[in-house]
Length: 409
Image (cartoon, rainbow, N blue to C red; front, side, top):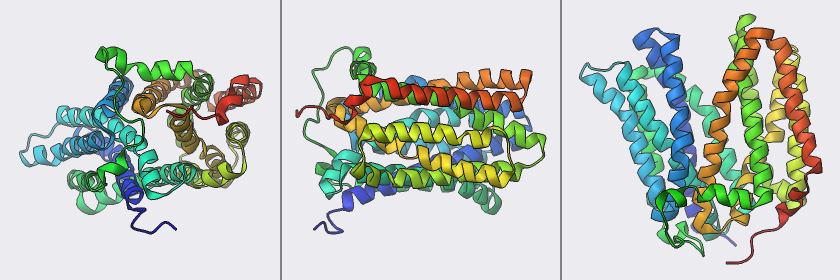
C-alpha cells in the first residue's frame, strides 16, 4: 500500500505543475492588458505577443539538451526562478517610473525563453517522481496533463481577477509568487526521486549536434514520428481557428461572451479528457486510443464548423476537448516508453519546437483566407482537412508499434 508520505515526490511535482501553468497563463492576460494600457495600440499588442512565439521554436531543443546534461530538477528550478524574475521586472521598473513598451517587450521575451524550458523539465520529472511515489506511469501522465490543463484554463480568470483587485502592475508581483511556489515544490523533492535508471549524459559531442538529437530520435522511431507529425499538423491547421476564426465570428455578431463560453468549454473538456487517460490506457491499446481520439475529435469539430447557436457550440466544444484531452498524456507515455531516459529532455524539447512552429504560419494563412473568403467558408474547410488527416491514420502501419516499449537499458 502506498502511503501519503511515499506519494510526496509526485504530489510536489504536481504543485509545481499547476503553479507554473497558472502563472504562465495569467501572463497571457496581464501582458496584453498592460500593453494596451501603455500604448492603446492593438498593433503593439500583436507585436509583443509574436515575440513570445519565437523563443519556444529556437530555444526548446537547447532546453532539452540542458535538461539531459545538467539535470531535470536543476533546470526546472532555474527556469522558474528566471521566469519569476522576468515577471517581477515589470513592477520593479514601474516603481522607478520608467516602464514603457520596450521594458514589457523585453520581459515578455525573457519569459518566453525560460517558460518552455521549465514546462519541458517538469515533463521529464513525471516518470522518476511517479516511480518513486508508486504511481503508475499512465495515471501519472493523466494527472499531470489534467492539472496542467486546469491551471492553464483557470489562469486567465485569475489574471483578470488580479487586474481588477490589485491593478495591472501589481498583478505581476502576484504571478511571481506562483513561480516561487513552483520553485520551492521542485526544490524539496528528494534528489533520488528525480532520476531514473539510465539517467546521465551520453558520450557528449558538439553541443549543436547534441541539441538536435531529439529530432533524430523522433525521426528514427516511426511510431513517435507519425504521432508527432499528426499533432504538428493539427496545431498548424486547427490552432489558428481559436485565435483567428472564432474571435472573428464572435466579434462580427458582437458576442464576446459566446467566444468565452466555447473556449472555456473546450478547456474544461480537455481537463476531463486528460484525467480519463489512465482508465482508457488500462482498457485499450494505445493505437486504439490515438485513432479514437483523433477521429472522434475531428468529427465533433463539424458541430462547430457551421456556427450553430452558442449553447450548441459549447456542447460540441466540450466534447471536442474531452476527446482530444487524452492525447497529451498519451504523447508523454510514448516518449517515456520509446526513448531512453538520457535523451527524453531533448525529445520533449524537439516536440515543443515543432508544436510551436506551426501555429504562427497557420495564423497567417488562415487569416488571409478569412480576409478573402470569410469564416463561413474557411472554418468547414479547416475542419474537413483535420478530419481527412485523422482518417488517414487508419492506414498508417507504423502505428502498430505504438504499444511496443523500448528494450530494457
